[in-house]
Length: 457
Image (tube, rainbow, N blue to C red):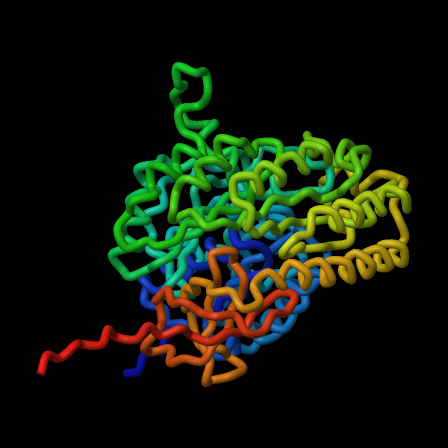
């Protein structure tokens, strides 16, 4: 008697938080005896970890689901799962739209996948979207990289930006304890990981839900304190964190990043708009002047720091002058990378029902103009790397050129250079940059020669 192999395939949409959730769910499935399948049509468990930030990502999920739902009509043993933000947003409505689904589960339930699947395998159709307290994550993720790893430190978000659906689908802020985070990082170090990225939807709000107040009157546990607490784990060479909110980004945090040698000089701080009236309408809680002061402070402490951000164009009511204020901010700050998007109305958000929506044509035009400027400024920022020697952590082979390996500088700039991945993977090597592009670099490895022995005759 032969047993059909249990194979799974996960498709992930959206942000790093979703990717980290997918890694944890993959780890659970492999502990259950499932094997990864590169081809979704060869898998008997399909999981879509979804994003609802952008309308096009949501439509893509339904397109993928339609194909697999048709397949399930011919293969009833296929298990179909929708996880993540679309699942949280739509809930039971997803089952009405795609009755072939077996499990609909929100982001807060990622760690409960095995329990939920047990109900599915007992013949139930399951919806898990109720708010829960996230228990300490004891699962072992199936990491997509053997060199770098994401470590969740805070779940959820308490902000109420008028365009954003995240608080509705990811729940309230819940910080993990410093001790639990440290244990996970120590385990990663023991497995040979060299770099970690601390993750949170609003990471510089870390710790404000944990108990304790210092004599100075601040929270006992903050992101700054966490960086000091986890910094000295042997084996971990680099530390990053994302995503930061300008409302909570402090000089104390900046100073810590400058003092701690493992913390990379790379900051991802979304500004969303360069106009104060639009920022107020977005309920972001800061002004463009405050944002500029944050960047100025970073560059005072770390002049060469890389700055990346997110920006939205075409927010309801945005005038041409207000859009030009965004262009002005991008021009004057000079970002190493800027993720851009045209405003997309999301269900359940205040801005989605405002009457002053802009046309798709206006939004597309502004997005194109902003992207053009972003490429110019990124190319200008890249020039500083020309002929410099950079430390690159080697992550993998260049998928487009088997003679090259790829890795990242401390400033998170993607870098390619000739090398053997079996020899260099996980190593930090010195690379002289010979070619610069807007968003990546090419160089040559500097191989230090062995000292010459002097012979006495």
